Amino acid sequence: MKRNEIEALIFLSVNKNELLNIDRQILKIKEVKKAYEVLGNYDLVLFVVVPSRVELGKIIDEVSTLKGVRAICTFILTERIK
Image (cartoon, rainbow, N blue to C red):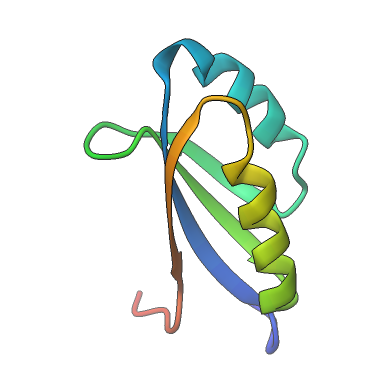
């Protein structure tokens, strides 16, 4: 991570019938560096890297308005341990 960059995890709960469409849309977002389908309380986890909190807000807005997204939860990473 560069000095001023922000890394964050965005957890998404989605409608299962929209999952493939959401996956396709996420592939178009260059700030999403990694994306995983997961089991548990959420369906997708996105790892994003942005230059500022303003840019993070834009990504959150973009992702949260995708058709089929039911819930979103964001965590800003503060310090790498390992």
